[in-house]
Image (tube, rainbow, N blue to C red; front, side):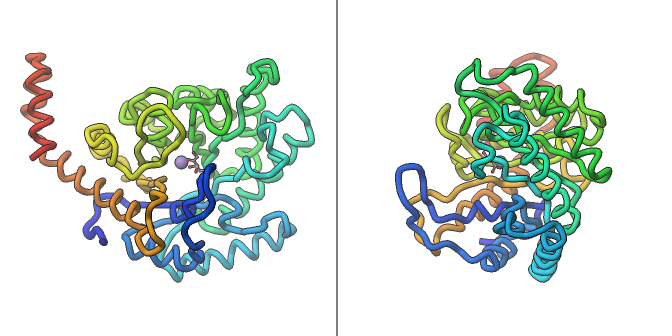
Length: 346
Ligand code: XUL
Ligand code: MN
């Protein structure tokens, strides 16, 4: 199903079309070739693709710096031909053995240096792909054993690493994607508040903002719409990963709106009311297909999520703003609740 006449521009990652493997079972679907993913994304209605550095250039360690750029330029031609832009590049700082103790906060200097080098290469790839956005999901920057790292020094390490990236390329903007746990037990940057505090101690806070993922906010016990509002108020919401999450458990990346429709509605409402997207921001999805889905049905989570965003846009637009304003003034929030539920059911 294709959603026509869209309100937002949409992006998605190649990892969102996947084989269905989980920690308890092997793949149950065939790996979809990259070119086919691009085709499907375009067909469903996406405008851009989100990429990790090694999604952009697989086997990234096999190439010297010059060849890396050549490979990135080849991808740029492929994206152009598919009619998709690159939204951002994220260094995948959690799969390599050298990042097992974290990347920028690893205790060993040579491991922190690897993280720096890898980040610079991600920045080079972004440049070739025509985007200046670098996303940092700080996957392993935290601890399981509290005494294993100095939390104060770790915060400084993160700021210093970001400063080096900002210095390396004066055009980039960095989007921190906070998440409270998984794969680490306790993250050093668990929430948007922490991420923006980190932004403020960097050498150029105007170039360090956030990407908020619904499921990550929910894992921190925070309403995603409120997290988005917090960042919007500071003009620092430069990306979102819409999805859903059923309670405090592993990061589920469920289809947007599939668990809590009202919470989903309020995310769309806050984005719409605050002109999100007017400065080129994409509405990104980070959703996973259920393991039950067969090969040919493993795209529905993308189409459904996109469809739900646009349906909720309609709901946000048809809200009776006067009714809302009146209920705020007479503080009859029970009546407001009834109105909202009825509106969403209608
Ligand atoms: C992990 C997650 C990542 C980032 C990109 O939970 O959301 O896929 O979005 O690195
Ligand atoms: Mn994400």
